[in-house]
Image 1 (cartoon, helix red, strand yellow):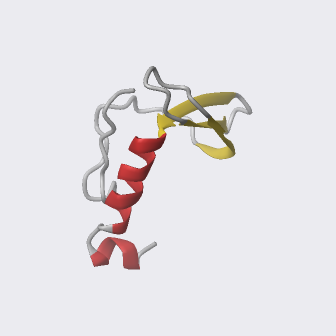
Image 2 (image 1 turned 90 degrees about the horizontal axis):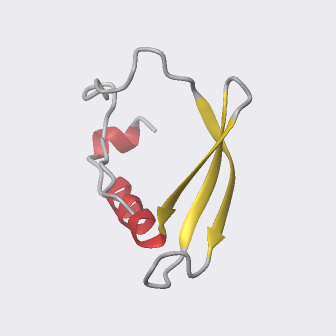
Length: 83
């Protein structure tokens, strides 16, 4: 798995390295792949259905998912209040 970069507020710090045209989508399915990493750890897989109807599969290790969860929980109050 690769490092995941977390941005607290995309309105203030947008991802400028993405193309001008980005298809929006929503996560429509989530599942766990037990023992999926080389070390035998679980991976969370998800399907994002794009506005075009195309499905894209992504995955994140269980450990990375927990780190993201912790980062979101520790976000500055002003960010969390707007959610």
